[in-house]
Amino acid sequence: MDNHTTNTVFKKYINPLNFNVIQRMIDQSGIDRYSEKLFTPRMIKLFIYAQLKNLSSLGRISDHVKRKKKVQKQIGLKSISKSQLSRKLRDIPSEFFYTILHEMIQKLHQTLGPSRANRALGKIHLIDSSTLSMCLNQYEWADFRETKAGIKMHTSIILCDDDSYLNDMILTPARPADETQLDALIVPDEHALHVFDRGYFNFKKFDAYCEHNRRFVTRIKSNTIVKVIEELPVDSSSPITRHAIVKIGQMKYPLRLVEVLDSKNNNISIVCNDLNISAEEISDLYRSRWQIELFFKWIKQHLVIKKLYGTSPNAVFN
Image (cartoon, rainbow, N blue to C red; front, side, top):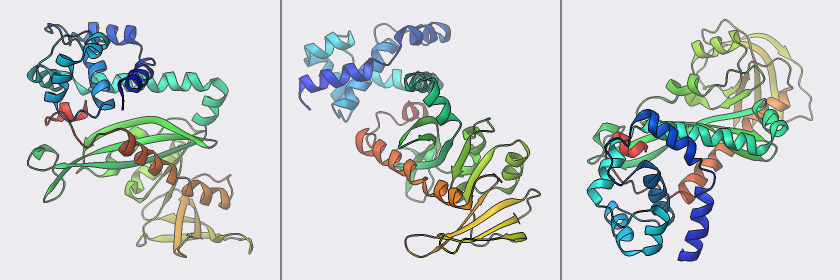
């Protein structure tokens, strides 16, 4: 990426950030109280620049600031040491950047406009997680396999028409099961419909969602106990092979069961607690999960995050 392109893209990245709001957060939290020159707004700009330039280490970031006049002008620093960068990245609470993330998401909703945003918020929320693998000997606090460490991005995206965009993201070490973050990603809105995979399978949670009018679609496991209440008719021209009202496992609330063949002719069993939508819609909704996989693919391809700038939990999450 040449300097002109970097400058243009850098300005586009910086533009949506409301530094007045960020500064108020800084003042309230006191996180810059003991900073001498690497104030948090400068740090944010510097690490955005480093990501755009694929700078692989704090040492390279420090060197760029020292040698590049344009970087000095953009960031407002003439020099910064590797140790100062490391200390700042380690010490700022990751909750600070999580708050900025939500500020950005709200701004995105406003940019879409009230009618489109409301239509999206009342429609499909896709929930899934993706793991970023890391070296075990550097990140022992995040171990999840015998030879690997990692963190999980527990994510919710909104699907509206043909577009999808982030609604929430929670970072944790990779070991805890996906279902531990499901409640946090469920939107408290009876008009929202949540779609998630078998990694979030939990009968108690499903009963609670039925009780509180939280709509969901998910796939059941092959060994799930299914008690049939009523078999429903299926159109012979439909891809649906079965439609029934059932209870699964130890649940007290009934669900819709829809079975359909996938592209490899494997039988897929899907359940839904919405009694008003059609069996075909349930099948299509579950198929829409692919959009969140494309979202994770975009993150990993375009946001170069394989190389992290710190080893502590706070530095990694930041």
